[in-house]
Amino acid sequence: MSALRLISNRTSQQALSNSDYTWEYEYYEYGPVSFEGLKAHKYSIVIGFWVGLAVFVIFMFFVLTLLTKTGAPHQDNAEPSEKRLCMNSFVADFGRPLESERVFSRQMAEESRSLFHFCINEVEHLDKTKQTQKGPGLESNIHFQEAPRSSGMFEEDLSCLTKFNIPNFVNTEQNSSLGEDDLLISEPPIILESKSSHHILD
Amino acid sequence: KNISDFSLNVTDCTQVVVPEEVFFTVAAAGILENLLVLIAVIRNKNLHLPMYFFICSLAVSDMLGSLYKTLENIFIILCKMGYLTRRGDFEKKLDDAMDSMFILSLLGSIFSLLAIAADRYITIFYALRYHNIMTLRRALVILAVIWTFCAGSSIAIALFSYEAATVIPFTILFPLMMFFILCLYVHMFLLARSHAKKIASLPTSTVHQRTNMKGAITLTIFLGVFLCCWAPFVLHILLARFCPHNPYCACYMSIFHVNGTLIMCNAIIDPMIFAFRSPELRSTFKKMFCWAR
Image (tube, rainbow over all chains, first blue to last red; front, side, top):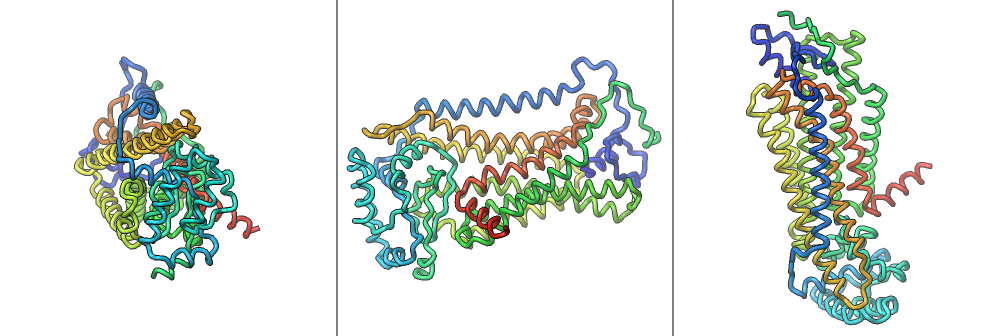
């Protein structure tokens, strides 16, 4: 950066005028630097810096891995964690406008209540056949349309829940209660598309 | 003492020169990639969300960084070929403008990363109120404030770069932001881990311990990339300010162009770890390319 060259010009050569501003590609404006009598290797700062950086990154990685294995407890109460569990385990695909209109024409409280009931059902049904439970559970309570690919999704979702990928999800404006913790899934994230719902709720 | 007389010892650290082809290739790749991200977000209405706006802001700052390097290279080539004088006022102003563009890019990157981390934090910990807290309008206001602040600071820093007072806050800002972002992500990570523990306690879950590693790897990649790409340059600024005549510092400063190339590599890597992780954005890309064909 040539601003730095300006700094060095002004600090090192006080007697010279300020017209010594040059478009140099090199940094030799710092003046002749004596390399005599160096105790350590001349690139010691470079090496030390990169080694330090690598050590820090690896240290950070090990600290994070240790956090996954040992217990630094972050105890939430059971209810939100159940909710989160449930949010993650269904895929609400609002791609078809007709269904989403039906969905969003209901009251929001009704939706969240039914969602919560769904969640409780979901937790209870976890030990039963997963795939078959998911379909009726969704449709009976919330009328959300399941994505066609959801047949293998439940298994995938459970394993996805255990992966922490930095949240990468798309959430719609009005579905705040639905978007809770689908963040923990990044492949695939829960995408709530509601093109028609935008103008319904506006 | 004649400033143009540079008698250097044989053992001196000569400037490590990155070939111009490499420079331009890396810069062009960075600019193109981030431009694609911007276009994809603009074209797809589903992506008009606060989270994607912050990712766009990161893409813009990465583009500015790459653009700066490209322009600087072009001007240096023009200087060498004699089209521009080396000591003119116009060149001085141009150089100041480009320095401020670079600082703008750096500050924009830092604040965009901070905004992305804060957005994700709010999404996890204030999930029920997320859409009230982070409305689209508020996200745009936040972005406007961030970029105004960055623009003001970059112009101030470029104009007053000879003051120590500008260099020190600039270099303190960097680790502070890094630390803050790290704290946000670690807190989110702890929550995810406790969540995973709860799932593991369910009777029928098939939890693989190995999958928890993925979170650690993701976080390390995020912060590691940012550190490795920006820290060398920040250290360079510090050393240039405080020990320009020390031989060790001079040797470090001789790899300045490698540090610049690293910053442009950051512009290439950032979309991959932020933008392209979203399937929606990936599918938008595929549509764009298929349509182009």
